Amino acid sequence: MARKLPATDVVVIGLGWTGSILANELTDAGLNVVAIERGPWRDTAADFPTTYAQDELRYHIRHDLFLRPAQETFTVRHNVGQAALPMRTWGSFMPPNGVGGGGVHWNAETWRFLPSDFQLRSHLTQRYGAAFLPEDMTIQDWGITYDDLEPYYDRFERLCGTSGRAGNINGQKQAGGNPFEGPRSRDYPTPPQKQPYGPVLFAQAAREMGYSPFPQPSGNLSQGYTNPLGVTIGPCTYCGYCEWFGCGNYSKASPQTTILPVLVRKPNFEARTLCEVIKINLDASGKRATGVTYVDTSGDEWEQPADLVLLCAFQLFNVRMLLLSGIGTPYDPQTGQGVIGRNYSYQVTSSVDAFWNEKNFNPFVASGAIGMCIDEFNGDNFDHGPHGFVGGGYMGAVQTNGRPILGTRVPPGTPTWGAAWKKAIAQNYLSSYGMATHGSCYSYRDVFLDLDPTYKDAHGRPLMRITFDFHQNELRMSQFLTDRVAEVTQKMGPQQIVKRPRTGHYDDTKYQTTHTCGGAIMGTDPKTSALNRYLQSWDVSNLFVTGATAFPQNAGYNPTGTVGALAFWAADAIRNQYMKNPGPLVQT
Image (tube, rainbow, N blue to C red; front, side):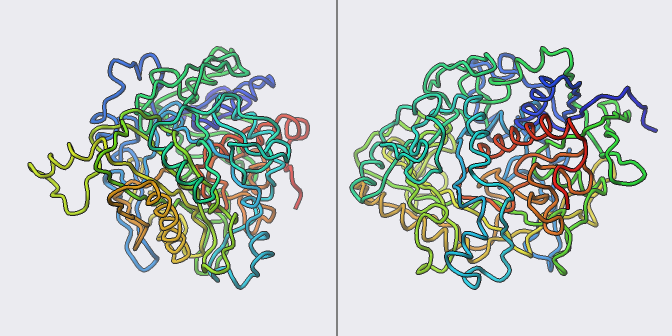
């Protein structure tokens, strides 16, 4: 029997980027906020000191910052005809664990989606006709526009101190920036990072081919910066330990380095760590959340009543919490009815490895978001008609790390161990470089999330089951993008290139990205979306669900910039609309 605690105004489930942003905004509005986080407290000085933070074995190989599969895992299958099996070790994605969430270990690639990404089905149908889209593709418009979200993109970038160069300010194209981006109200808060030799060489080749290369927008800062909350972030030291690592230099934007130092000092905020929410509680009508029930490290159950519940955990955990709590109608792939678990999507990445005889790229000089990119083949920036697919992605010389163990490349035919392998590593470490593509992943009727009927967690609750596989549209897109970046790579003058497009079935054992999306998406119709345009549940009006959970499909960019912007968008709606008149913000 859960012991009941005194009520609070707001309870936040998960204290990552979105939980921190919403908690800070609502405490500023005078509300009492309790945040409940399953993982431990994480602090820059104590957890990521530069004396040991750069430990590839600890963090990359042994997954020190991530949830343990023994705590909670997922079952995976390609289609409904297969039996799903549990992930026993993390592979294709890395579920975060602890205060800061994925904002601790992300690369800090901070993108805005294209204007057409938010009105995707309408845009593609108008340009190509409905018959051009695969019959089983379930992409949707978001219910908001880029113009709606632009001020909130700006707020997130100001919070993070994002380093970059604008390509479009109030409709005026800017030299050296991304000419395809939507109009922004002002430039990035800090200039772009200095570029290593590899990206410089790529940009030179891309210009010669008529493309418009630009520096990747980065949350690894090019210079010191004090954000609007008064928190100061330092300049990046290019140590190469960003992806899967915490930053001990205070130079990577994270909740720890941008917002938590202010939030934790507020008397109307409380964080409870190492406490796992097991369900969102509902009243007898099932239309109002009364709070949450959680379990502490002693196994004791507690009920935290609250007037407002904010579900701010990792995307997959958000969907599972809704299913376990009986909120919304579960999706049925046979009928296409239901909304919880619908429109799951991922990301489609590929690469080209290049080898020179005499080059020195100094690959240990890196940050998590450094590189020169081109956007000519992202979204619908090009004519898809002759190619037979929709979607796209950015591409470039993008170096996400400088790790010495797994950041090495050897030519095809090299043995995987022994003296010949060691010799190849020594010969190619300095003189090889990798180009990457980062493509969209659209949603389909047969790709979804539900509760597994067989496997359960330590609390006896069903695990989340992922039914996912790449579709031909995405595989064709990956081949196209890979061929295009290979053309630029060849222009750079290597002796050998190796193309690695995405092919075949989804492989959950090999890392790709942690950009899992959808499952409780936003939209304009309760029949095809779980959330309205303000991320408010259609079914439970005092519940808001944040993060990439709300994406109807994934675009050709990293999602965090859009996740942060949506958090500020939802916070604004709660403060200026919901608090004045609690209830549904969109009438049906």
